[in-house]
Image (tube, rainbow, N blue to C red; front, side):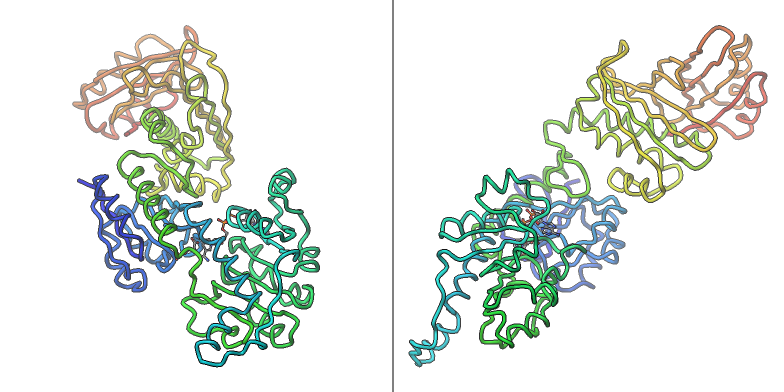
Length: 528
Ligand SMILES: NC(=O)c1ccc[n+]([C@@H]2O[C@H](COP(=O)([O-])OP(=O)(O)OC[C@H]3O[C@@H](n4cnc5c(N)ncnc54)[C@H](O)[C@@H]3O)[C@@H](O)[C@H]2O)c1
Ligand SMILES: O=C(O)[C@H](O)COP(=O)(O)O
């Protein structure tokens, strides 16, 4: 059955055409995001949800999203999505980080010019027939200092364009490297310095706990008199009431705002001030940007739903369409190793180590580790999956360690999972043969060669004569057919392991009898 995607915001129709072209069924309801009850009622029927900023993907919506696998944001900001809730549910969240960056940078610059020359007010006055030539005295931009807060994709485009306009650009961004600052031609400064020196300030950070109210009343008071401020990033970066007070007092000469604490903004403390210019979250609103982000999100979502490729996900590592088929058997192997170990452990897991050897070390090991952890936790937490598993493990205080190394055995690729609990440490290794099927090759250092079958029994016992015959008769008497039998031991008379594939369910009674056999240390029925 073709995957189904719901588009609940006003994406460019180019997305609809691309989804259809890729074999994805698509339902286009551009205003649905504004009706949360209707969205909640519909979401259960879809594998994918494509949105912009109007749709709020809350945990309540996610609770109803029973088959949802992916949320695609046609744009940059993800603050309208409850990412931890999506991750906990195993839903991939992706955005299109570059498609509207130029357009938004251009809007920030347009707002800067609008402030410098009071264009909206001059336009309104002229069209009202007033011809107030002496009222609208502006300021020149050339030679002025522009303070960029957040010098990532958009901030750096703004900086480059502003340098082209002969502005001096200073930037505050703790993550901006000195080399990148030098390449851009901007001076990297601390926030206090930026506030004190800038004639214009433009904001380009995401809204995070660290950036919320970055222009607080206190920081706004540290700006130089006559500063002009542009916010084309997110509402919440500026304390709107404090900004209004400084506009009223004349300390701030002007503010241009595209984004607001509450959106849609039908009223706001900044509205009505003569030196304020507002636009209704239009930063990304050009034909070019909307077509870019719509096509990109449809392509990324289709790639995931049809081919398993992951690009620009914020809660899972990227996997290209070329990598996906190579990774697939190892994802299965890692998940099976985890599941094997998860069915054996009977107390709290403290630490999980994964060692990737040879060819396996060349693969996307974060994706493999996530699969192994999902397999490991699933016996205890039924709905954990590859997206949610690392976060769930972290929440439970489980330490995860990954190591890669060259092949150290005859196998081309080996994945070894070691699980430590309070009581003991178990390790299990596997490989993928040329048939693409996973095999178990060592359990606690004991070598064997076993396929992983839907129903298995794992027995560890002392290597003594007579065990196999007694074991087989118990299963025979219980009407359980043995399909394959793999044996391994560390040395003659030492510790042995039997991994047995059986047809159907092994009755508890039969397992209890096996447990009582002489020399048997542990017996477990496993299902995959
Ligand atoms: N108005 C619109 O329509 C519109 C359009 C596109 C993007 N946006 C918004 O613009 C913002 C920037 O987008 P981007 O693509 O440039 O993002 P980005 O991730 O490329 O850049 C953000 C920058 O902010 C910096 N940063 C993070 N925390 C910081 C802090 N505490 N102090 C200073 N800098 C900090 C990061 O290091 C990074 O360089 C986002 O919030 C995005 O949602 C708005
Ligand atoms: O983060 C973004 O990409 C912008 O805020 C654009 O939002 P929009 O898609 O709702 O215009």
